Image 1 (cartoon, rainbow, N blue to C red):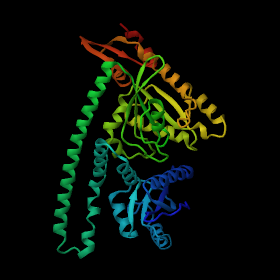
Image 2: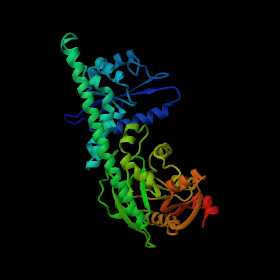
Image 3: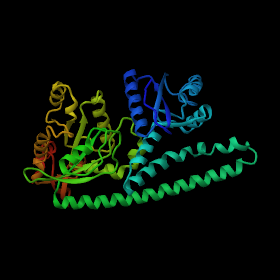
Image 4: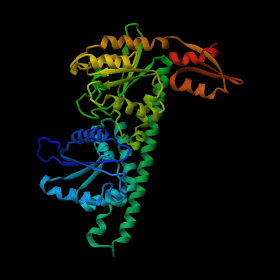
Length: 422
């Protein structure tokens, strides 16, 4: 039972999770705790959590029908207004559960989309959220139209209902296409901005990390930016880029990014490609980690998983362990900085350790002050792709069977390119 002090006119949510084969009780508990945080961030009061152990979700109700009926009985005492499931429900499951429970039924994806819709401020952010919501809605329109049959039965309503449903589907598809065109324009604008940065030869650092790890607080501390920083999940969605001048006069552009999450819906990653491209195009990833969180290792793995999906895994990365000010002692700090050589430990809130972070950034970017020219055979396709993926290409031309490239490259790639240096 999760007890939260009730607030007037606040939604009262019951959370439901499934312990499937291959999922430990610990993983389920952590996932449910995170779901409760998400629900609170969306403005709901969590009145209880319910879990069931099954080999796999059932096709009609996700959970067992008997379990669902028991849950419905509990509504009388708890005054539940909405039921939130920890995984994404199929359209049929959502429809069946709403009919059975007579309550609003949401899944994790809908909950995250709702939070994003509350937090998006820029036009770009709103476009991306609307696109994700419509992509989620499209296969579920039948569920939205189920009220027709409940009102007057089938005769006399089937034809108009189906016609209106098709009209709605077409309108949603047209809106999705329009949003995708507008976001393609956003991508082009960002591409032009990146080309401008490349002409100035300014390296770009993308600040990545699990949601609520302290990315925005760190960006504010380093650059004097005025990014909203709150102790809640997904406090900021709109990316912000600011300039930082290091002690050696090296200029670094820092870009804040949307926080990552376990089970981050694929539709969100697709919709936020225009924003998340900043991660893929960055020269350096600054991975901010909440060291005070009990599941810090899982957070690191979740961020690595998303960067892999974005094609950015393997980029030069500086690990920054944050929130050391709330730790009881230095044992955990020492353990993780030993585990990840070259990492730094800081408190973005108090400023502790930030001078060491600045020195680490200067060291990481030392190689970017040196330009190298490479003559690489076109047959080395994977190596050429690697240069574009993790390097900072300044010039490119082709001479017969060779590509001549002028680029800044990270140290680990320079070793592989040593044979091709001109």
